Length: 296
Image (cartoon, rainbow, N blue to C red; front, side):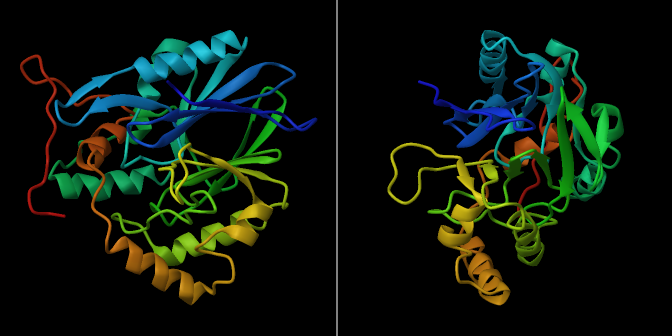
């Protein structure tokens, strides 16, 4: 059974937010809506992927579209926070289903060049063609009457971005829930130092700001996934941050990252996500993935 929770608007300028949990990848997908106009954005929606069979599908994305329809919402934006390593994005599929423009951060261009080299696929990725908009730090746009600010938020990747919408911020893979801590920073282009600086910027938001994270794996002995906590809660309770100096955080983060295996979807995910979720061009009627051997 899919876990869905509604975080209600707190007043003018504040969005309604639905979180939809994808159990296979531990990802949280978001519907962010203006209560006045019923216009909405979809954020970090998952394309189904079975690593054992290399099989893709859109059941999960379709269920999010059904949720939006049931709530009477008009989808006006398809947003991603970064090229995910732990799930395939559904951006291209959702753009086709809704007609809404899709977007990600502009530093996806740099991430694409990095991974073209890792995959040995020069010129394989063209983010300017696969995304309608590439956001820079400080860019703004609207969802209905809601003002949205884009923050560059490097650390987990060099090009991650945060969407700040009134009293809500979609912080992707920077923070986990307070009882878990923070996200890893050891992927190509990642940096624990950058992650610390990003988190300090996020914790500079008002204490009652709702922070919505990208993943939860039910840590701390919990049975149910969680994905929302306030800035104030993270300041007081986040196990990687509360009472820690920058040097202590970096040492903790790098020591932990050294013990973590790669996500089982990562080498498939990046070459699809750098195409906005579009599969590689078919060869003889079929698409193929390219996997570097003995690189990681």
